[in-house]
Length: 235
Image (cartoon, rainbow, N blue to C red; front, side, top):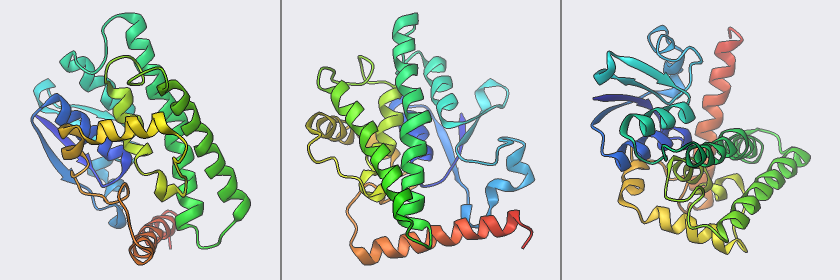
């Protein structure tokens, strides 16, 4: 049995989607990020970096894995699914997984901070990160013009990228004009495993929100960010 430590974020959903797709038995523990539960000593023994997600594989002598990309690789190799075994096929999946880990995730995360959470609107920073997100989405769109999925068959690379890309509107970035990317987004959204995974725990970042709902969520996350900073500064 897998024990999943998570929260309602794209990185958390990457792992819950994979677990659902792989039909692995798991139990979920949702950490209270606003209370900095992820920084408590018991969790730091699982993930020294104090971030979600993390897992413990109780079928493998309690082996712990942190970092969402590493977890996806571990689960794929454990089951022999969602990633080819041959070196070239495996490499293609890992290349697109790293594209998400090093590009899509960090750039969308920074766009979220400056567009949604930062108390001051620093337009050059907003433009910088939204522009880079749009560029990365264009890369995906161009690749998907000739490929149904990112690395051949549906894989952990698709799961990792989709968990973030589906939230593009929250970053203030449109996918208008990216027909191939939109086709891919919709295709994965129709998968039962993906549908179940984004509900564990639920998040509405990938859905439509009115301005009031978006403002409430932004304020909640801003408070979490400020609380976490205050605790780090000893306030």
